[in-house]
Amino acid sequence: MNKSIAVLGMGRFGQFLTAELCKKGADVLIADADEETIRRFSDSVSSAIKADLCDPESIRAIGLGEVDVAVVSMGSSLEASIMCVMMAKELGVPYVIAKAASLRMGDILRRVGADEIIYPEKESAELTARRLMSADFLEFFNLGSELCVFGMRPKKEWIGKTLRELKLRDRYKINVVAIREGGRTSATMDPDEPLNASCELFAVASKEDLDVIHH
Image 1: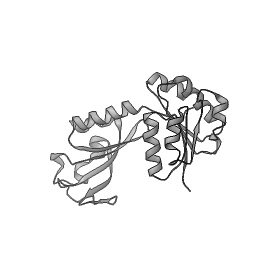
Image 2: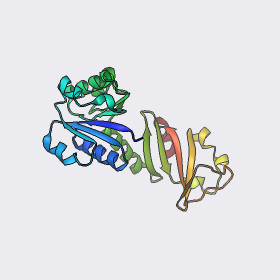
Image 3: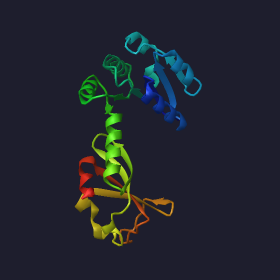
């Protein structure tokens, strides 16, 4: 059974998110005040509704009670975001994610019921900065506000050494969970197999510990 997701607010972020969710086979409901945007996406989503997202009765009529997740994506409209978060929780949505344009806005949205706050611009900037500062980093995925999964090339001084010798968990506080080599990714790694320059490591770590790897 596909997960049902409501995207409330179809600005640039909402449109990109909707397109990606549809590609992945999600059951998507969208709502926005702009009729043209709703019409443009109507053929690719399960339900497309023109609605005033500042009005509780208009939000109630969307049918949020049937979805698994609601994404409140109007990062520039605090009034609409607050109303959508509050109504989604009131209508029984199990998990509500809200986009915020600032830490202050995120704090307010969490206080009115959002389960998770996302800062797309901030997260994109963090990822870009990490890639610029380290040629070793290849991929980076957030796991909530504190943890991340990242892919990286072995540092020069790691090549030829084994994971057991490197003791990455003790030294860098990172936990290697998979290795990719020759186009094949495996989660069953031999801790006594020397690393070579062509492999890629995938690890879980706290974001605050990532800077240690650069040094």
